[in-house]
Image 1: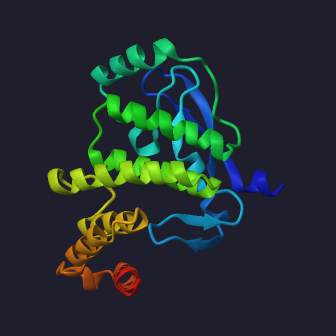
Image 2: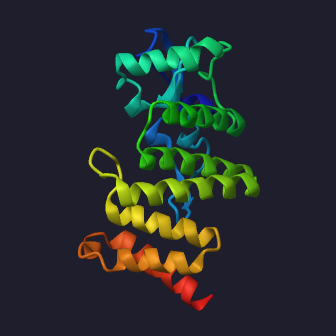
Length: 223
């Protein structure tokens, strides 16, 4: 009964092919946080909502986060139909997901994000979630592979893109880039990014981020 209580069915209408389907979501009220990693991966007792962040249409294969699922132009629909649907073996991701099936959904969403020319920061966030899933699954090599991809996408986005309309501010993004560099063993780069965030005039307005930043700064300096 616990699994049934944790998950609920959400009806979704695909914005590409208009097919209606059911996907699972985790009830926020049921989440019980166990711990959180320094790059914001949260661990919960029971289901982790990351596994259900991607909606996948079983009919045409369109895969995206909920916020992206209704935002699609006619030109982008054509791209999906030509590049995804034409090769799609119809299947559903609407049941309870394993880590492995969740990984499949994120890889599909990243591929579609590349086809639809998502911002680098948006692609980076998808890649980071994928790295997290591999961490949960204990696959260090694939975790590192996607952390490297995340770092490259985030760094490019930080320097070249606006953060408007993206659920990420400059301090959090800079901190994440620093922490990912630290996890990849790039200590000098990590310190450089942490220094950039530490010198931000707004850092005192985010006490949690400032505390995490100083902890990671000391970890590198003392290591």
